[in-house]
Length: 420
Image 1 (cartoon, rainbow, N blue to C red):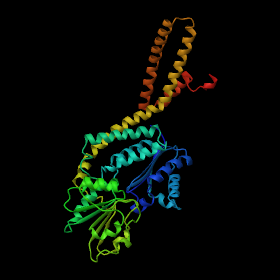
Image 2: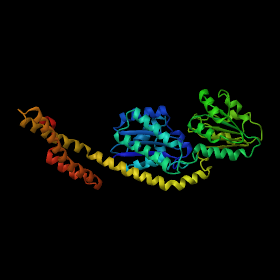
Image 3: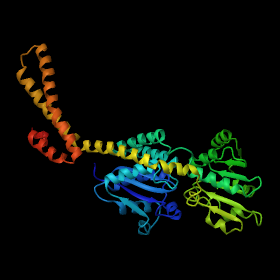
Image 4: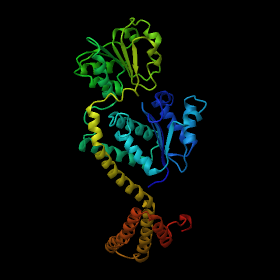
């Protein structure tokens, strides 16, 4: 297993929403982070993942760089005292544990709502950004593609992704519960990003009035038509809040809705706000208004249905797939350790073969040269076979280093090419 792969993690398990929103990383900042941190420290396989529930940095380095990463992140966020945030982070330093953790995050085992459908797409986006920034090396490429294949198996072979137990599904369930307290409840969904669009789809078929709004009119028209919901212009939307009983926002704009926007609410009216974004788009202060209740992303995740239990029951199958995939990945990783030695040995034997051919075929006919070339290749391939098999077997036993040293000594594989 390649040593040095690590993860620095800030998640809902340890950090409240107030901290997660301060340290969240949008796409623009993630790009800057990838481009600039590799110049600060010689890291490889650098990937940044930031969702509503977690901000995580995956990297390869011989030393733990948690303090440097936290300091760099805080500096990019304009935060002067990085030490006060360190307590909310966890670090995984063992390569195998870090790789397995990325498996679990990607497949939804570490999500607030188990099996969250959105996380795998967020992982793919984070990976693509790393690839675009040239911070994803062979190790991370192989690990992520192994994870994507494992995810395909989970979808095809288990019930872990059945139903719609996600943040958006949990929100839909909460809305349906809250709407029962109204006669002809009116729902407004602000923002049709990944979560907002998924929420709209989970609300299809509901018996109450649903209106959508979005900054992009093309997206608004598309989702409204697909779901059969009403739509309203985004411009001036805050002046229309009093018209709705339940307002859901997934806009990543801090305090998009605050106390000033609710001054026109009727007295003694009952109204619910649901905030699905990080940074929070609805100011917590709105709850100071009589009759107003606010749910944030941490509070809605327990509002799930039987789909969650179905996924929980499938966890052993998912973990078995992860275990199989990890075994395959570890085998590959160990073989990567001996791959340079195999290539050097092949080159050493090929150099010997070519040297002997030149020595003994100076006046040979083309027919003899062709025969000798084919015959000598067959011999060197057979000579290579046993050392390669032994090296791979030694990898499985964790003894490859000893055999590598023996081969280096026998064939002088570490010789300086200039002094050959």
